[in-house]
Structures are given as structure tokens and as C-alpha cells.
Amino acid sequence: EDQVTQSPEALRLQEGESSSLNCSYTVSGLRGLFWYRQDPGKGPEFLFTLYSAGEEKEKERLKATLTKKESFLHITAPKPEDSATYLCAVEGGSGTYKYIFGTGTRLKVLA
Amino acid sequence: NAGVTQTPKFRVLKTGQSMTLLCAQDMNHEYMYWYRQDPGMGLRLIHYSVGEGTTAKGEVPDGYNVSRLKKQNFLLGLESAAPSQTSVYFCASSPTKGRSSNQPQHFGDGTRLSIL
Image (cartoon, rainbow over all chains, first blue to last red):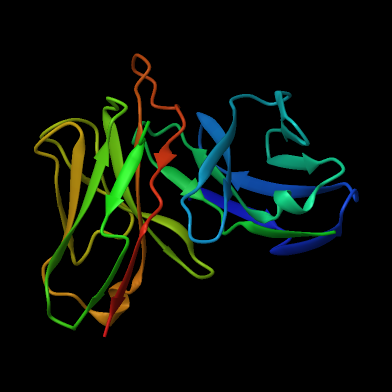
């Protein structure tokens, strides 16, 4: 069964304190792994797509990496505006166009 | 550039009432989806559509119906609302790339629905 597990559930960082969020997945034939950011009261906002092991994507203070079993979202020198819930989703190879979402990591960056 | 627009943003219903949630996208996307988001459960797929006139069941379809009469609109209906359907509902859409569907889904800002 396809499954996505994110850790930690919640993370508090001081401004400038770098860290990583983890997304472990089990899926038959990965077609894509997606990272989203969700602010309170808003819908998920797309950040990155990763397709194959070894791939990396960067955007400002965020960098996403992918292995055959997990993905990491590295946050370098975070700012308070990076506070949000970060969601990970995978699309498997069954061709059913379905995402399996993790439950997210709630990030709070303190000034 | 509106993207994905959901109406209404908030609604309170009594048990047994019916209602329709509307999703509209202006990106000419083929695929559209309805999810519900509950605390500790993550986003779960209710129904989806791969094109105008088509619909399919997702992970949690019971108690919901959908229609995709126009490419840009995807409607989610609750025929007889139950307290267990209290949730935040999100609509999403994605483009196609040949036969591949691994393009990112774009989400609306949700409808917060309470069933009393």
C-alpha cells in the first residue's frame, strides 16, 4: 500500500537556525514527489517536484532532495515568514493520477 | 490570474441538509480533484476528474457526488449532510503532459464546512 510519513510533526526553530524536514515514502513506481507549503486558512502552495533519486531543487532558503526511500526539505537560515505547514505528496505508477499526502510538518520560526 | 476559486468559503449546515460546493479554474487544466483535510489525517482524495464529462472515485467517496459538465468547473455535492462530513474541502487542478499526469496540482483556498 502506498504510504507517506512526515517527521517531525512540529518543529520550532530560532531565526537563522537551519534544519531539515523528512518525508519517507512507500510507493510502487514513483512518478513524482511534491512539496507544498500551507499557511493557516489557505490552500497548499506548490514548491517543488522531484522525479528521480539524486535530484535536487532549490528556491530561496529551501532545498529539496530525493532518495529511493525519502525526501528532505532543507531550510537554511530560516526567517519568521517561513513559518507554515510543509506537506509532502507522492504520485505512484498506477496511472490513477492520485496523490498520497503526508500529514505535514508544522514549522514555527521564532524571531 | 485567479487560478483555482472555491465557493463558498464558509458554510454551516444542519444534519440532513444538502449543498453543492463549486470549484472553478481558469488555467485550462484537464484534471480536477476534490480533497478533504481533517486534523491528523492529511489530505484525502474524495473524487477526481480526468476531463470534461468524466468522474472517478477517490479514497473517501461515500456520501459525496460530483459533476464535471464544463472543463473549468467541478462540483461537489452532499445530498444528506452528516456531522462526519465536517471538514475543510479543497479543490485542485493539474495540466496534462502527454500521457503523464505527474504535473503539480494547484489548490484553491478551501471551503470550511460545519455540519451540526
